[in-house]
Length: 256
Image: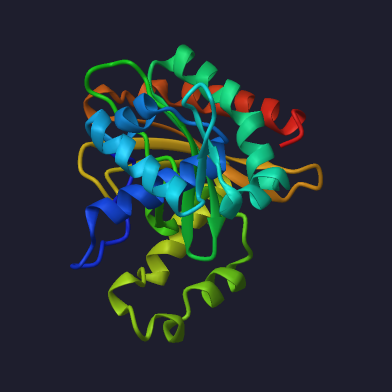
């Protein structure tokens, strides 16, 4: 299960290429991976995961050490060693994502926004059989995700209008949201300070999110909890939001 519907993949999507790109993103974000981890995260056989990693090694996207652990290769190492804001933010957030999962028993995510999309840069799944799965490394339309909504709500209304101007969607009109509806949704998020996504893009999934800010008060990322709607109880909302806000403050204090 996912917290939102991703962009529609092209009809010619090659699964093996998509898997390889996802592994490359995971390597760049995490710095190290094993065959078992890749197999589990992609839901593929270990032999398939091994072939993907070996292909990345061949193309210099990965290197393998003596313990058979894979690390970013020359193509990725510049970004890895630069310790970008995203990698620092992810490192600061992971322990707090795990704590959220331990406290509420549901999956937790951290996402950043680039234009009209959001990328999940960290995910921690809960252990329940019915759960929202990891979307780490994947990109979604911002207006369809909880984290995207809390980040868009930090923009001025004029900035939102510019971001979703019709001329930007001339070649992809089906991806443009109804701006009036989006404005109303963002107004509610600004007033409450959190977002609730109840089946906005995927039936049966509820997600709650808040923003993570830098020292100057600018929004860096969206922190969210995702769960099957059958387990969501509106009476839990204040406690869930309080848990998210506590975690957001901890991430901010950690220098993300």
